[in-house]
Image 1 (cartoon, rainbow, N blue to C red):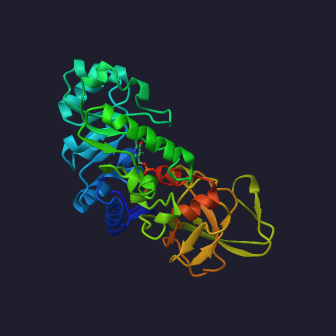
Image 2 (cartoon, protein in one colour):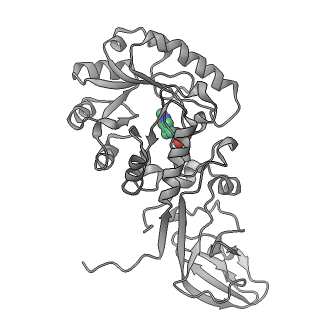
Image 3 (cartoon, rainbow, N blue to C red):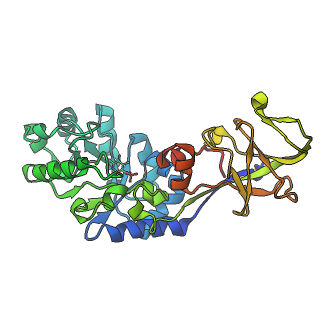
Length: 346
Ligand SMILES: *Cc1c(COP(=O)(O)O)cnc(C)c1O
């Protein structure tokens, strides 16, 4: 095949901001080490771009959800530093763990027995302290299947770290109560938001994800976390429309006067969902605001170019992507806003 022409859709990753975010979270983690959740292709921003930066910044512990994600991360880091949060749910996964050296986070007594039968060696263990998602129940901690494990990181996961909730204290207390009952090397509780809850929550290792990539789950982090993902889309057609003309599917927009409009190369297939509101849909040079007209299509959206009449086909527009702000405007979570970004971005 011929070389592909340049894309009309791109995602700029601010590598300095990514490294600085990890370092800021590491500072906030105090004496605890700081890992990185790199699941879901680094929350949509790309393992190949992000993992080498996190490693260079000093990160030595990487968390993915699926075994399918191990290979991509292991291209950049020691497989032994990769933990798989879903654990080993069958023999094939246990065998794959042993073959690759990535470690399962054991989540149930059944997984524990499977791992011991496979003679898997060191692993991690998740304790459920109230989120009721993955992890062994506190009353299962004394089971012989757990005693048989060689546990590296003993961990739990907070349900409400982004809120000021009594649940945080409750989970902290349950986790503390369990720690002496299980033999292990190190402990870990906090995700991004948990880091901001203070040193009691830090234990030996923190596991931020969202805030590495620019998410601000608690206001304490708003001064220290910088935007990392900057989507940009090119104008692929300019047109002039007359008063009374309509724009887009279902003709939901009607021009009140003659207008200059631009068709922009981003749509809901790229993660620019219809939850995006009319205002501030795109910016020129991060400044001139170009309101969105009509419905967002799969591959494009139409903007009002009245404020920027010199814009041409091929010119780039910035898609505002300050996560806390955009989350407030769209009703989508900051996590969704990152992971929804499609794979057509260059
Ligand atoms: C995803 C995940 C994290 C990271 O959480 P953030 O809120 O993105 O910082 C940490 N621990 C576990 C178990 C996770 O599933």
